[in-house]
Length: 137
Image (cartoon, rainbow, N blue to C red):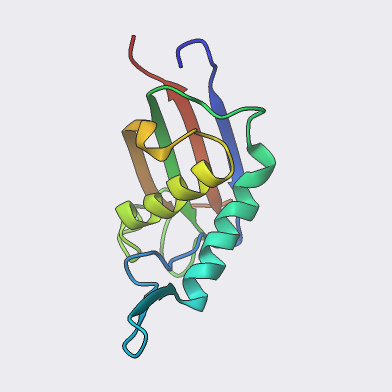
C-alpha cells in the first residue's frame, strides 16, 4: 500500500450511533437465528451514509493504519474536547466502522487495518473524522 496515498475526511453526523454489534444482536430461541436489531441496522446505515461520499476510487490493498475520532455533540456541562467516557465502548464502534469501510471499498479487507488511533470526545461539530494511510515496507 505505500504510495497509495492517504484517505482523510470528516463526515458530519447529528450524533454518531451508539448501537453496536455487541448490544445490537438478537437471538431467536425458536429458530436459533441471530439477527441485527433495528437499532443496529439503523446504526450501520447511518455510518455507511456518512462515509460513502468519501470512498476512494479503489480499495486500499496493503497494511494500513487508521485514525478515528468519534465526535459526540456537546450537551449539558460537557466541554469541547472532553473525553466521551460513555457507551458505546470505543472498540465496538470501530468494529461497525471498519466493517462499513470494507463493504464500501475503502479497504479490500478490514483485516488489513493493523494499527488504530482512536479517540471519542464531546465535540462540535459532531460527526466522524477518519484518516487512513499505508504502513510497512
